[in-house]
Length: 124
Image (tube, helix red, strand yellow):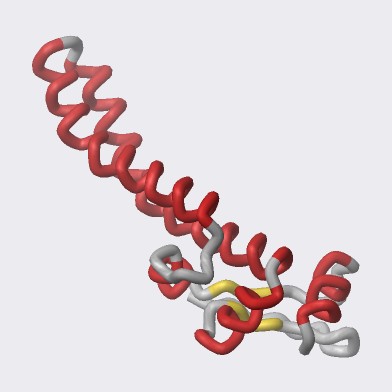
């Protein structure tokens, strides 16, 4: 399916697209990914890394329950980062023809239904 057909079919709801979550996370290091998506991914990754020591310091120096909230939030960030990377892949595939081709070739995207096909697949 060509990029123009993909965009038109996706926006009209004729197809669904599955994004491979693991590959999407790895693709953030690819030269094909737009800088704004890389920056957002890097920002949230650093927030996650820093939430653990920040939570411990806050537990010791401020209030224990505030530090606990920061630590708990830090444990949920990896899943959110992974989910956001799948959204970034889909958004950029809709915007950029070269990235769309890269995503299809790399197995990042799978078009799950055509106009006449109502079956969908889920990628993990």
